[in-house]
Length: 242
Image (tube, rainbow, N blue to C red; front, side):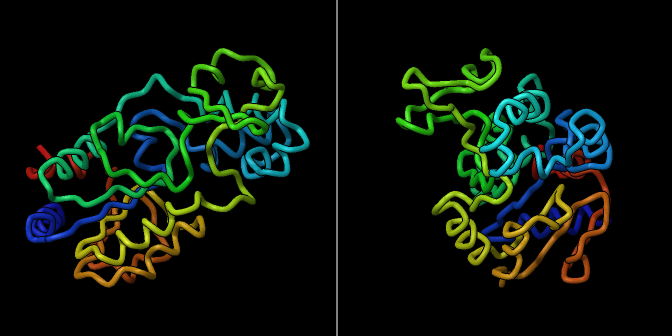
């Protein structure tokens, strides 16, 4: 059984790294705004795609609509980690997992107990003033209306990577280091269609590549093991994660 092979590799690997996307969080109830349903909802209400609404250009010219969409779709805080999050945290606590690299901005990996989490696209829990740099928590955005502003008058923006923006300085480089030194790379809950994050695969030189995703990815032929099951179910079945 595929699960047994994965478990065998985890137990034998001296250095395992996990790289995950939106599919890891959808099982906790966080909607995927890039799914067909998410795109439809954005087009129906705003007449624009999620990629446009969450772009740097749109944020600059229409911040009031940006924050309306952002609060509705990305500020989802009343959710809990699922078995995948908890399983990864357990592996790390036992020294079996080196790092979690995530495209998600929801903080669920940390909530489950993971420590070395590389957030490629930032976090909704960090915010800052664009003028004075003062830092704010998520409560400021949740409790504000319209465009949130600092006492100095500057816009308080989320510390998340918008479309048209570069990844956080140093984070992608650290992710490359982790992938390059991994003997086992587990990729889950991502279609591997968003760059430059998907480009991390080119740095893997380890023994085994595992892809866990409910749909096909462009890299399936490169993987040593492909599992087409919900990632939470997969980690629930692994004895090493219990």
